[in-house]
Image 1 (cartoon, rainbow, N blue to C red):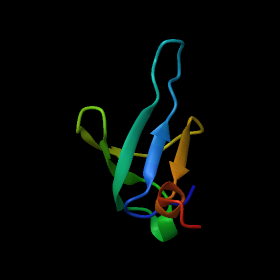
Image 2 (image 1 turned 90 degrees about the horizontal axis):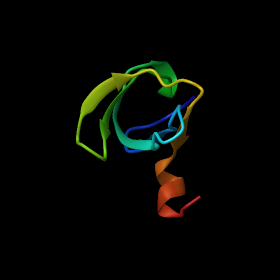
Image 3 (image 1 turned 180 degrees about the vertical axis):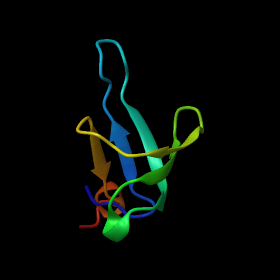
Image 4 (image 1 turned 135 degrees about the vertical axis):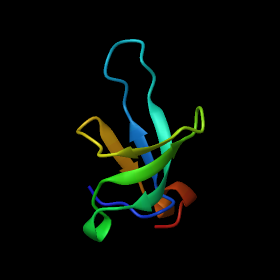
Length: 68
């Protein structure tokens, strides 16, 4: 998994009824874009240090803006 500041991290719900959560990547702590990441979740503004698992997807900033 590779990310840059400004990319979005989508964490899929793990159980039925649990909604997906989206967070903005504020800081990339790992080498060359690798986790862990400091993120801010969009639904409640909570900031956390995360090491995403297989239930997570990075949406790159250029994909979000339609450039690329």
